Length: 564
Image 1 (cartoon, rainbow, N blue to C red):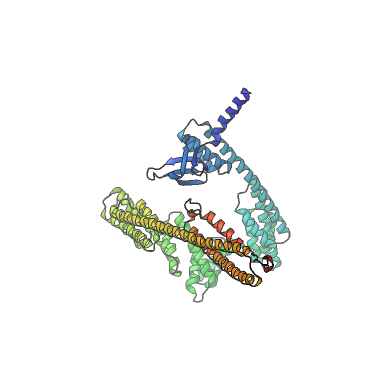
Image 2 (image 1 turned 90 degrees about the vertical axis):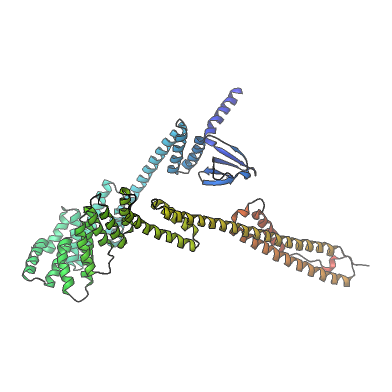
């Protein structure tokens, strides 16, 4: 018997490490388990933390706090997250437990369990993903067999955005070649050899040694032995002998587009654009595409002068395009040649950025200068310009009574402009005013809600008085003994009183319910606050209102004893 008792005690001691943490026992008897911490800035409340989140609990609601060590409390929360498969949060709290107590073996074990669970989940997802991809690839093949090429293309586009195994990549490649091959054959049937060539070339780009595709191309080109490169060479010579020829320029543009050689296509596109007064959407689209691509490529290679030249041509033909990329190219080109200690050069570059709305880059230049010369007046003036704009934005938000936005903007100002004490002083003053307004709004809202709750109590009391009067009338009417004639008169009077009190009771119960519900919308805490307990009051009022809507039989004449 004693041995069994010792085993039970031992198990309880072991389990206590898993089920206990800080425990709060409220005055209502409710127990809450988590982690308790105190706040010096808020001595009237304790901060209570669980896997659900953090909350503040007033000390005056707490009967007792049973405190555990912080690592035990952290582990309780970590296990909660682990059970709900929130592994990142579970790992975070286990790490907190280890920081408090590096010897906590449970924390180390839980971290190992988390890592293992993550691996298993990733493995399971990988298997499921692979199965889904295999099914999708099989469906692509079926769609191709059924000549549903558009559907096959859409599904293939979706598959290519997924992570694929090497085997799946090979299968997808084969299917794509097969799809392009079938699309090429379809274009031949539709008497569209150019369209067929495009699809066959796409297929060959994927599988250069695919003989079936190449044979189809040879069949199309059999009457044109020059092929593409030879055709380009011929048309180049024709253009040299007849500069400005729009038809030749158009053909060369087509051929270079086919070769995806944007740089060589550009001069012919410019000739086409400048040489015709008729709107040509195809040329416009191609010119915009070429210039945008070449600009992007040059910028990516950090050839900013070349990128700027491309963009200037783009703005020449399409003046409504955003000029910002040009300004950024010019800024990047100047920055690349600036000497590190050339503070005036960095200031001028910052001013250039400010003038062209490259605000982040302007701030960066001013901050750079202040890092080398903390009292540089020009850099401080540049930053003050942006800080004043942000401060004005905070002021506008305050005027719109968007106090949370005001506080957020002030936080950004404090983070970005620590070197501007005058701006910071104004910003903090604005923040204090916003916080005061928020507190004022909260107080006014709570006062209004409480007044509505009390008004609802008054309506309920009035309804209750009518209910009591109605029940008193029923008792009197059932106890009278009168003659037949008097009995009829008495019945009419009592019926009138009953109906009047009943309707008044329903009216005031409805008013009480509406008023309490309005109060709860303003301050939901009134639902369970001990002084108000609107949840209980609403349940009682609705129940009494429901009973009043039931049919109440009135006394009949034959129920009264006749007077002899």
